[in-house]
Amino acid sequence: MTRIFMLVLAAGICVVGFQLFGPGGAWFRAAELEEALALQNEANRVQQDRNEALGAELYSLEHRRDAIEERARRELYMVKADEVLFRLETPGEYEQRARELASMPDYRSPNIKPGSAPTFSAKRADLYHAPKNLRAPPSRTKRQ
Image 1: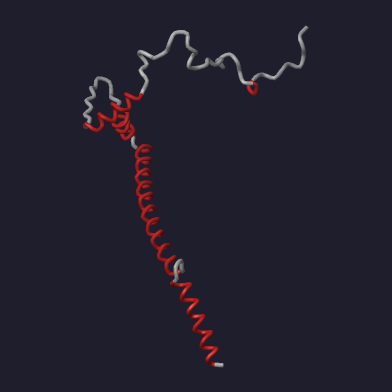
Image 2 (image 1 turned 120 degrees about the vertical axis):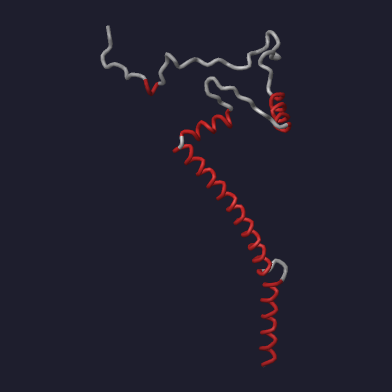
């Protein structure tokens, strides 16, 4: 009787060990989850840094008038009256701008043949026509 009990106990220990340490077992799954957790924590940290930078930029744009001017000068190349803008580009920036310009159609000499169909359809202006929901209600009495 003790032998049968010991045999069943050993078989149970083997089954549990196989489920823990076997292929696709819980031990390896835990290691995979720890790796995935570390990667997700790193991605979260990067996103948190980005959110903090965007929050700081938003705060400066809301509370500092000169931040708006600085951003307009840097990103939109805007200048004040009586100022001259000198823009220095690296060769990489020049190549990128040249590629962008080359992909744009030339508006000065468009490639439109005479008699071809128009490239857009004109729309009726809403200047004199109010939408139905904004029109005055019809009058109650009819004129005769």
